Length: 409
Image (cartoon, one colour):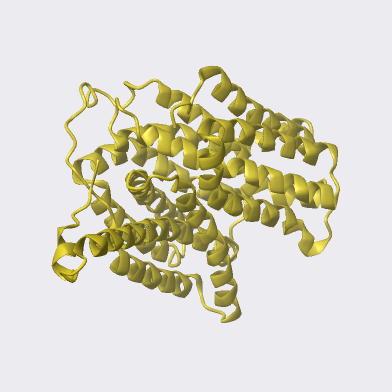
């Protein structure tokens, strides 16, 4: 459980009206904790968006073909996957606060090194390390989100993931400025490292400290011997959601260019509309959960994902397809924050191990979703592949309804 020491407030508050002042100061302190957690989520998203924004420049500087780049890019998820069994154990041993602080700095540091390679193998090695240490940061920061949520009576988890999405826009805007100033990727990444260092220095003191947890029986036997079977279903729901999210990241531009026939720069309209509604949806997620309940929000989100994808298939025209992609963005926005919060509150498995299990299963969906689209598109067409993924939203709703998940949240 979160351990917040408010004793220092009594020493700095005026003696007159101490009780009222204490409550007011305590509330302000909690808000500052929430801001710090949100900024750590933002920092993670900012680093990833910065890397993604300079991929074309690195491809050009290293003279890589499409297939060469595709092969090298697999190094990043490979690093994440290898780190997954370790990250939960390390975070449980040393605490999410320490690993979040160190992890975010190291994540930004290895981002900087991605601007230095002169050979393709150097970029692949850098991406592997970027993904490896990024996973430690991801688990630790998500645990901070779970414990910060426990300090508040109302749902706030969605705003943390919204901060990650917002960082995507900020990273893209900074990249445009860097390109305008004709700065190299290394110079760009070094500036981001300085920004992240400043973010950590001004917020690390407000991350949540956690009481030492008693070891949960049999938890150390094996990473794959899961004591809480509900975590498997949580992971599967996230798998389906992140597969849907992954194809939007990688294939929305291609879909608009080849199927919608969007002219020129309008080819990015689908991706942009998806990102906008995903960010908005995450900031609205807490309000929706408060009003309708977690289970109803997940049930609806699954159907919205499917409706969006099938509308894109049935009406492959600029305006209808843009609206369809907006629906997909809004649908996927709510699933991950709600499920991660539910998993982090497991009573049978520690928070660090629970989130490692769920994120491990879900990340596979993000990894294999885009290739599946490519294989199906090669055999049939891109429209049919989007129709196939459209089933995933229905499965999310079906699993949630049938298993009666989230009913106690």
